[in-house]
Image (cartoon, rainbow, N blue to C red; front, side, top):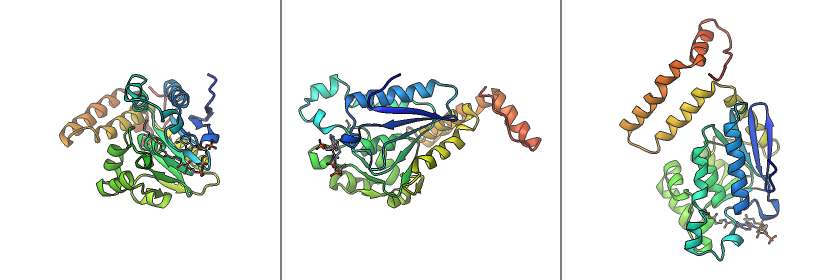
Length: 257
Ligand code: HXC
């Protein structure tokens, strides 16, 4: 596929998608959103890929939805053109998605990061929901995912009063998994993703699905969802191989079956 607003690259078993509208701080216009999700879905289907990394550039991961594209929109257009619903495509990605964030992750950019599974932040990363400053509120999950992740009060401050979080604060409040130097931040994220991509693929898939269930349901239903994912793994060759390798004190040789 040839894309005009994202770049794609493969390193070992990691698929990397780079947002590439630097002239607009990687603001998401309709083209970039479509290409981003197309590229992610293609990596998700590729059995040679075990994990995805989505990144921007050093200065901006993404400064949100494209305000210039949105400025004259009517509610009717926002609904019929699925300008907000399209963001839900990330929920269909089965493989782990790691956001490698440097610079600004604002508005929809922050919401995209919140929809990823893990976050590697460079020391310059800044997270915010500044929609209030342009007369709207987050529309791609920011109010819900932030509240679940960092709690109500700080979410209120971010959403109502444009409070931004530094990389160190993002780490402190559980929005980032790791903070790394700006130089080499993408390499650090890819190394992190490579480790994940080297694990038994079906177990990784079931694990992601089970953890996500925790955000959807009661504890009782969540525990049932976990069991539904746990038992079938005993039908995989990789479960037999993983346990046999442990017993024989050797590294497992995963088959992805
Ligand atoms: C369109 C944008 C943009 C955006 C930046 N640009 N953000 N264009 N949509 N979200 C453009 C600028 O207009 C400018 O273009 C160029 O990128 C460089 O930006 P500057 O502002 O000159 O850079 P700087 O002074 O370094 O400030 C960087 C910034 C600032 C702090 C990121 O650009 C900013 O505040 N951007 C808006 C952030 C925002 O409000 N995001 C929320 C959007 S709403 P020109 O042509 O002038 O050079 C949203 C809702 C999602 O995301 C809901 C789901 C649909």
